[in-house]
Structures are given as C-alpha cells and as structure tokens.
Length: 457
Image 1 (tube, rainbow, N blue to C red):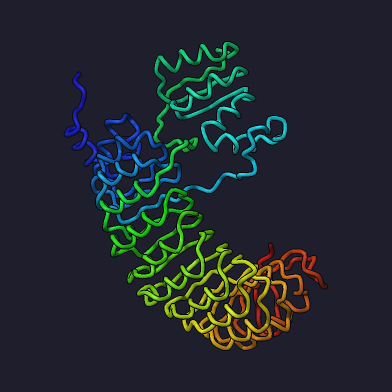
Image 2 (cartoon, rainbow, N blue to C red; image 1 turned 90 degrees about the vertical axis):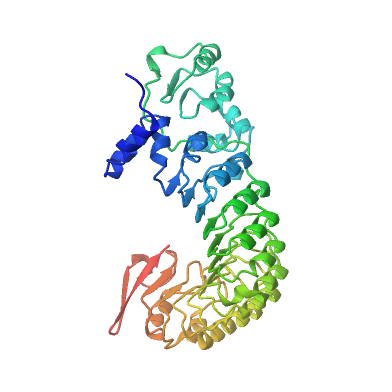
C-alpha cells in the first residue's frame, strides 16, 4: 500500500471534529503532525527539534509559546514561517537556583531534586551531574552523546523516543553494567512530552529583530528572562509593532534606559513589566515624557533597585495608570517619591511592599488623593503602624490591605482596621503576628455588623 500524501491526510483531518482526535492524529508521525499544523492558530511546542517540521507548516499561526532556550536560528525560522503572529509568549521558565550551580558539589548536594537542578544549567553541568547517575529516563536523543560517556555507573536506562544505530552503539560502549532486563526502549507517541534539558544557546537582538521585522502585527510579547534581548531588539520591537499592547521584560538584564526611550514613544501599550531590569531614573523620565503616559494602564518596576525618588517622581505624569508595582525598589525610594505618585488620579492597585522608608506621610497623601484605590500592599514596611493606617479612615473604595511581615502591626490593630476601613473585605497578615486570638489564625473577622476575611502567610 502506498503512503498517504499530504493532500489525502488533509482531507482526512478536515473530517475530524473532535480536538482530542486531532491531537491524536498529530502524534502518529512527523508527516501527520505537519498536516495537522496547517489549521493551527496557536502553538506551544515543547521540543525545539520539532520546529523545522511544525513552523513552516503553520502559516496561520497567531500565537506562539515556548519557555525553553531558543537560538537565533529558531527565531529566524519563526520569522520566515509565521508572519501573522500577534502573541509571542517566549518568557524563559524560572526554575533554576544559581546557588546550586556548583560543579564541585558531588558530596554537597544531598537532595535528589538538587542534582536535577544543577543538571539543567547547561550541557557541561549535565555532564558533571551524570557521573553519579545510576538510572536514566531521558526524552531528547541529542542529549545522549554528552551524557552516556560520562555515566559509567548506569545500570538502568529508559528511552521512549526513536533511537538510531549510532545511539545504541554509544549505549553499549559507554556503560557495560546496564541491566538488559531494565532497558526500556518501548516507543511511545512523543510530541506531548514535557521533559527538556536546556542547551547552551540563546537568541540575542539578531534573532529578536528577525521576528520583529517579519511579524509587525504583534500585540502581546513576553520576553521574560531572555538574557540576550537588549536595547536594539526591544527598541525595534516597539517601533515596528504599532499594535503592541502587552510587553513583559522581567529579568531582561540587558534592557536598559535606551529601550525605555523607545517604549516611551508608544501610543498603544497598556501593560509594561520591567521587573529586575537595570534601569535608572533617566529611563523613567523617558517613559513619562512620551505618548506612553496617555495610554499605559499597568506598570511593574518591582526589584528595580537602581531607582531613586527622583525617578519615581516622573511617574506622576502617567495619568492613565491604574496598577503600579514598586515593591523592593530599594532604599533610595522613600516618602518623597511615593507622595509624588499619590497624584495619580486613577490608581486602583498600588504595591509598596518592602519599601522600608515609607511612613505615615505617604499613607496620608495616598488616602487623600487616590480615591479609586482598591488594593494596597504594605508588606515588609517597617514604619507602618496602626496610627499609619488611620489615614484610610472611611476611604470610599479600599478593599484589600496586605500587611505581611509588618513588625509594628499587632492583633488589636487588626480589630481596629475593621472600623477604620468601611469597605475592607480582605486583610493580609503574617502568621507570627502577636496578640490575643492571633494564634488561632481565624479566617474571618466580625466587627460590629461588618465581616472581612484574613489571608494568612
């Protein structure tokens, strides 16, 4: 019987109404997968080895998601194959602890999950971690060349994907102690497997520019923790994609003030997250002086610890902001900066957690001016007391107050807050708060005819 061609498979696929059946169809072989991609408008690929088959066959793709390392080659292939993208979700997953990346930790990492973390940093770390392994279940054949020769102690080996003669020869040469009764090479459908070992390569501005030039319809872009993304790529992205509304750059350490100069000129962007970026007061001046101030709704500057009150003061010009996160912005942000942003007329959610220098002065200004405020986070603010929270007496909209790790808040204060804030319905508290009944950790509090809940942490 002759092999079915793409046209015949496409006709078959068009008659499959059930999504689960379409999924099963795509798992038969790479040819079936390629045909199934023709109709796809979104894709979250788990293995980069499939890019060459999936992307060229997906011209109608509008959403692409991938959380593993990507090379410039992958990005350029994406640019050539999918010009209609509107959503690019390629933020790198956050799962590694750099403190565990010690390649001399053979006797210092007792927990099984810790060697797993060290092995995920790069191929070199993976090779070192393989020395102690006694069993292996792996999903990527391109990892085997590095792992097997470094694993003389293997006695159990499992692999559920296609293997070549070369792979089996390496297997036999690398560890003669393997128990053939424990050799699991049963072939399974392999396109849904979520196992992946990060490689050594990561795209940079060259790859980002390729996608930006080809995909000018982008509206949603997440580049979180992509260390290769820098000012050149981000600036071109913002200038070329006129409909861009959502941009996440968390942990992009090469995104600096020059990027913010381009972002500040955007007149469509509604959501911007710059968590842990190395930006300065100059960058905030750029943001607040362009068209962005008339459209940005949400701004996250958490952990941007190079900022000072001078830079925070510029934010008062961003009149459309409803959600602002300044948590952990460091010791150079104090009442002077917070008092300035209290002039934002539409602010509804304000995160000031772990700003150790804010006092009752800030809260008085916020309570008086931010009359749409619904949620405020004051966790870790050492100077906050019950007297400070009196500023919110009879506030018309405040519903949620987080006071986690506030050492000067006590149980009696919790009861008083119910009378102070007429619309309060959720209060965040630390489990070690002192006072009567605090050890009971009640989930609900009744004060007079009012009820509100407590979120313990």
